[in-house]
Length: 324
Ligand SMILES: Cc1cc2nc3c(=O)[nH]c(=O)nc-3n(C[C@H](O)[C@H](O)[C@H](O)COP(=O)(O)O)c2cc1C
Image (cartoon, rainbow, N blue to C red):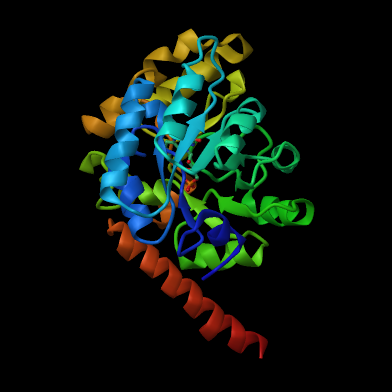
């Protein structure tokens, strides 16, 4: 199944695993790449650039297929040493980077000089056009339904993807709410060149996270996510739990006076407690509405093979006949 995305990335299938904090480690990235997709290591989960270099090396040991690294540019006053993280990517021989969180313009020259393809993940057509204009090779368009940060425009993929197709010249991935072969067939129909999945890849055998988190995703329905931190203009879609409901109550009570410090207990340091210690109720962690479509924990190969087979069957057996 060749599209402009498989040509750009050198993968068998147009399927990408988006960067995920405390999930995107070498185990998952290599499993996705070995199954014909593009696996992505999440740089900032590694405490230091040296740790990222070691994680990239570990991933090289587990796959000889292409894989990428996610660089998330955080809205923080004390940014991590991005220069050293970028250098670790370059020195590690990684040829694909997923950028997110902010305009990656500052890093494009050095990435391009080193033959690195850049996929910028964003949540609006205007940001996608900006990414294209500064020289990104592709974009991932994250709809309102996505797990993580959907931005502030709230445009779902049924509208956002065809709008992106109308405006963009570079290839793009449909991201947010993607689960299976139905999602892939729909994404391609709406004009995308492939799809990017986050939450779905958490509920796989190889995802290096506690089983309690995988079970929480399987148990969740499409009604179980909430948007937090909207008053701080840092909206995040997370799985609900008592800590998240407490956070939302603080948002209601404090209104526009709310500050990050008010909710620090529900958001700071949560990821290791959830993903490693298996305490999914310890705070707010990203999860997409697509949880409602996730009912099993397959291997990455079973998942990707199933996606391709189902997409082919929808197009060949259902759509072709309906249109004949
Ligand atoms: C647990 C989790 C952590 C995430 N962490 C990051 C991150 O650190 N950087 C980033 O760019 N995107 C992150 N994302 C977003 C995903 O890469 C992807 O864009 C999103 O999950 C797609 O929506 P879906 O979950 O509906 O598939 C995260 C998503 C999840 C579910």
